Length: 316
Image (cartoon, rainbow, N blue to C red):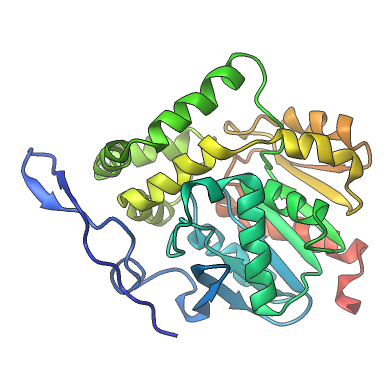
């Protein structure tokens, strides 16, 4: 299915101060010409949004949801390994990558869950297993709590599941709301992404070390203001108190896969989750950071396969 290109929108300064045109949104034909697993990409409408979704493999359906600020490129080496056993479905979240942006107020946790629920209904699939990275894990848990999904298990990969504590709780959300509401901010962030070292520092701050190619895809997306706006809008609207309150009522088995070198979501947060849901199982990944599945995709995939074996998903 062909993707409709987006028109250029607005201007930005280059490094010498001259004005140049900046594309507000990523364009599939230009920015996606060498997108990882491009042959598995398709575009469809669901819930009032135009979605970019990748589908590959055969077997039980495994739904992958990336985290804030990422896109399907995050699964570039991970998804093909899983596709040897599963039918892997991986969308770009609303406003991220090549999926259209919803109104600001729908970038909340319930809003994102509703959007993914509409997508799954449109695809006509019933995921047997779901895996979410960072904020993607919270969306999946919300979907299960609302009864929109009924998988055999939820895998939280470095999941951002619990509310901020202390001073960040009083500062983070108000600042994010301020930034998300200022159109100039997203354009400034996008302009700064032209500096390769800025992106390299951003990736390093997660505790992960990516290949130059991996850094390239993040830089490609962050150079578009729409992608920045989606990231800031999620941060501004996110209320993880919903997950904290809902965890004791979660009936789906939860597997907390935690990288010990994660500098974005502290590995200690998994213990807070287990205080709310003692039955959650903790599995650790030594010497990896927040983007563990991009650093060592085969190693993380082996953990997923081990969980699937215990759930006997191959028989579904």
